[in-house]
Length: 182
Image 1 (tube, rainbow, N blue to C red):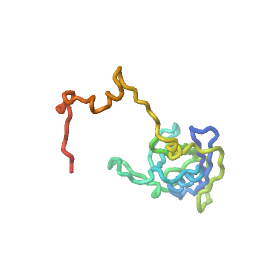
Image 2: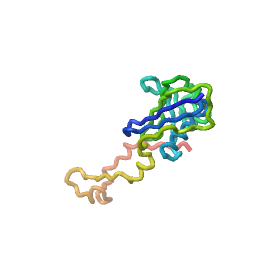
Image 3: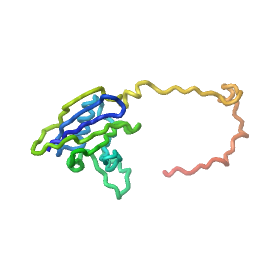
Image 4: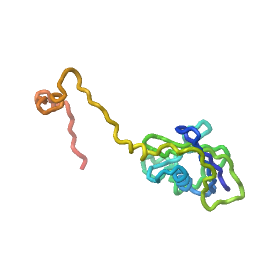
C-alpha cells in the first residue's frame, strides 16, 4: 500500500510538502525524505509522535533508543518500526519534531491510502513554500548579547573586582560540599 502524506508547518505560511511512501517503509525512511525535502542536514535527534484527532501526542518513535524512559514504557526506534504499524487509517495524524531543543515541528496527515500498489522508495510529490529556518541556521546569528547593569550606585570595576571582596562576607557554613561518587 502507498501512503499519501501531507506535511505543514505552523511557522511558515504557505509551506507544504506532500509525499508518497510505501506503508512497509520505516519511520526512518519518512524522516529522511522530510529532511531532504526541506534541505535540512540529518544531524538532529528527531522524533515522531502519533497524534489523536486533536493533535495530542501519543506514542513516540525516536531516532535512537536513549534509554531515558521507564521499563514499563515501550521504546520505538525509527529504523525498527514500519509505517503500517501506526499508520492504518486515512486522516491519521503525526507530529515530526525536527528541532528537539526548541520543540519545533511539522504536522503530518495521512491524506490517502492506495491499496494494491508498492513503491521502491519515497517520493516528494508536491513542494510549496520555503521550509522554516533550521536549527543550525538559527545559531549562525551568533550569541545573544546581554548588557550587565550594576545594582545601586557601586562602580562596576569595584563591584566585580577582587578588591571589592571581603573574606568576612563569605559564610562557608552556608554551603554543603558532598563527596564525589567516584
